[in-house]
Each structure stands twice: as C-alpha cells, then as structure tokens.
Image (tube, helix red, strand yellow):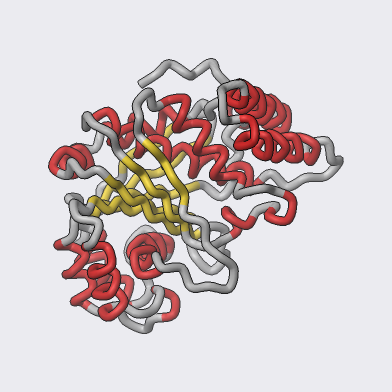
Length: 320
C-alpha cells in the first residue's frame, strides 16, 4: 500500500480502515476464491436516527463470474423480498438462505455519534478540511494537464472551488463532509484490497443507496461530491489499469439495483437496532441469528475517534 500518511490528498485514517479489512481472514478468503473481472459494491447507511441506538454503514461485495447472472439474481431477490427492511413486517427465510449461497460478503462499521476525525489530534477541523479540499483541487488540476482530460476535470475543479467557498461561511455544518470521508475510506480500501490480491484488469462498480450522500449540494455540483472524492483516492492509490465507475440514480425512477441494495439494507438496519444484549423486533433476531452472525459472509468493525482510542477494531458477534 502506498505511503500517503503525510499527504492531504487522502484522509489520514484511511490506513485504519485498510489495515482492519486486511486483517480479516474471512474477507481475504472470500476475495481469493472469487477472481472475477467485475466487482459490485452495494452500500446502505443507518445514520443519525434518534430511534436507533447505533450508526451503521454496510457495504456488500458481489462477485459474479457471469454478468448475465445479474438480471436473473435480481428477479429472484425481488420475488423473495420485494420490500426494504423498514417496510417489511417479516423477512422471508428463503431470502436469507438464497443470499447465503451467492458470492456475497458484507462489511459493516459501527460509527460514533460525533464523527469529527480531527478532534483526537487537537487540530481545528475546518482548517483541515480547507487544506484537504485544496489538495484535491490541485490533484485534479494535475490530472487536467493530461491530453483529453481538460473538459472532463474542469467541472470537478469548479466543484471543489465551490466547496472551498462554502468553508468561508461564518456558520457551516460539517457532518456530511465527515461521512463522505468515512465512506471514501471504506470504498477505496475495498478496491485496494481486491486489487492487491488479484492480477489482471478489474472493474469496480459502486452502487450506493439513494440518500443525502448522493444528493448533497446537488443543485450546485456537476456530479455527487463523493464520486470525485473516491475517484481521487482510487486513481492515485491503485497503480493498475483497474477501473472504478459509479451508478447514478435518476430522479423519481426506481433504481434497477434496488433488489441488491436490499442486502446491505437488512444488515445495516439490523445492526443499527442492536443494544448490548439483543435486538428489539423478532424480524431482527432472525436476521442476526441466521445471517449476520455468520463470519464467513460478514465482517463487522467499529470506528473509534477518541484521543485514547483512535482507529478501527473488529467485532466478533456471538449469538446465544
């Protein structure tokens, strides 16, 4: 993995996410046995819901050898579980059994309520973000210098300048910027880990659930800010011909990927409901016991951002 710790082009705690995922034997085994050309990464988030005890983000890796299987599996998923977790009174046991048979692996992180990742170092957060986004703007300026890139990156450069102007405001909420950094770290770490384990060109497709992460400052941006953030990390850290693309949801249209996004939805939704002993509703108990507790298809960890404990630690679920 490249040495980027002193570079503001990448968040400092990217290394914590990468090393945590790298330490997972079950994730390593999953990646090793699935040498496919295209990797899908579906994600869903349960964040800042006062009715839930936890903040959770989940990323589901799908490794299909035959692209034509995508449509068939999508139809089966729709038939077995037509609604999201929050809209379902029960979860079809056949749905859990079916996804357990697929080449799927879930990665989940518990996040703290306060996701200010600079406070542990007594560094002023807004000052850090100003330097970080200036570094990203300069990166895309360098990319723009290459042939055929000027038009492609000029809009992204304008986007980063717009964000930097927002940082000049007397009052600004930084919550979304924090979450974008965290998601960037996870998606980039997953792509780096797979790229380091397999030779040959790979294609990664990240498909996020429709939410505020994608629509943040939509009226003022040429594309979602998170896309440009991840693209910068991916292209600067992964020195291969591998390609990363993003699925952009059209307004008012049900995404074709909804059936696959239902998998991280049930995982993140269930983990968000957990307290120290159990989960509240019966449907969550069923998911937890019969799917999430299986370490061969799930990696669960927790992000710590305190001065006395900073980093990512793995959680071992034991269902009694």
